Image (tube, rainbow, N blue to C red; front, side, top):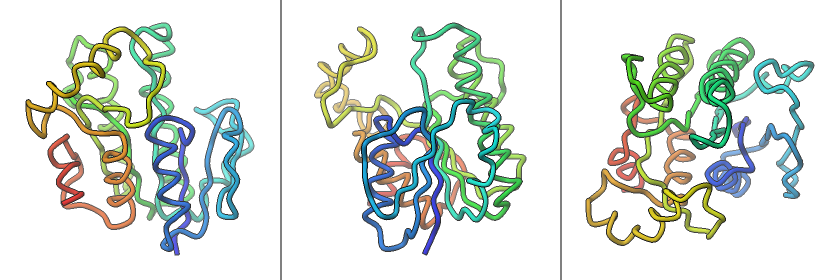
Length: 217
């Protein structure tokens, strides 16, 4: 039986991962780190409200005894300032992994990254550069680490789209699907693949869109 830690458990993908964990006989406990309560009630679920995600002030004990962790916090380009975007995309992820490695060095960590993450760290696109930097830094911590790089994520559950680009992408999803397995993935597919790898592992550290879908068979 595994103890799971998740950051971003109220988001589109994180909430689905939490659902898989709660329904799995392999998982005995789910510790979910949130800014506000999700409203979900379950005997396995322990929600902890975090005010400062990079430091987890006074909450580092939550990282102890963890078998599998999922980092699903993200923010869309243009929603916050450039500095906040870097902090959320890079520093939140790296500090989460750093605390995990210190408290549970044998844990598995699944990171929700993104297509185009640039490990050369030379990209002029902030998203690609910071995702690549996060992957690089986490990869040095000694954890069993998997980075998921989905392409366009189609929200199976309708939502208010964060910007016009995502609204257009949702409308054009039937066409996007025609470009093959490298172009898109459904939110439910991504969450199931992340959960599966978190429980069973994978043959490679970086999973691009095609490889994520291949996890599902």
